[in-house]
Image 1: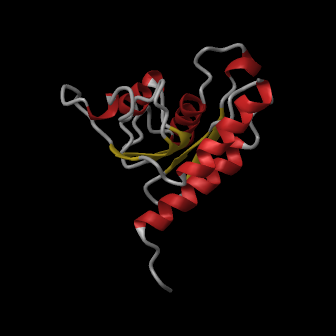
Image 2: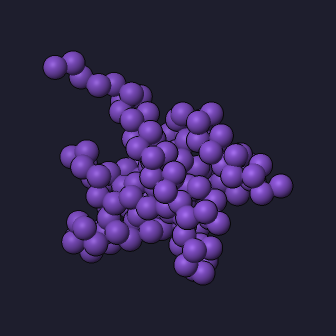
Length: 156
């Protein structure tokens, strides 16, 4: 069996996050997130639910991180796990990924207005932090950006 390249593996993960994003409640910005364990098993998947739940913290990343920690049952540390998101995490979500000690963050579309993994800020690689996950952005960027662009186009 041929080995899958890390690039192809990341693309498959983002494709899965796009499927998750398609299930976002209608009033919320379509973002899908998943957390994958070190063995490649999907631990959690979530969509944005801020509007649906009336919860300012109900971003897809936060919900997926919470569920992954529950599934692992190992407290709050998600070491060696990967957070996969269709859109570059905001400051809150980037901070949550750092606090949860995820090993990697992989995302699709860059978010120049609120992104905190290299666009507007670079929270995850701040040298003052104790933990800094590896980051790969721009994976299937056009598909991920298109999902968000269509959402906002439909509302204008």
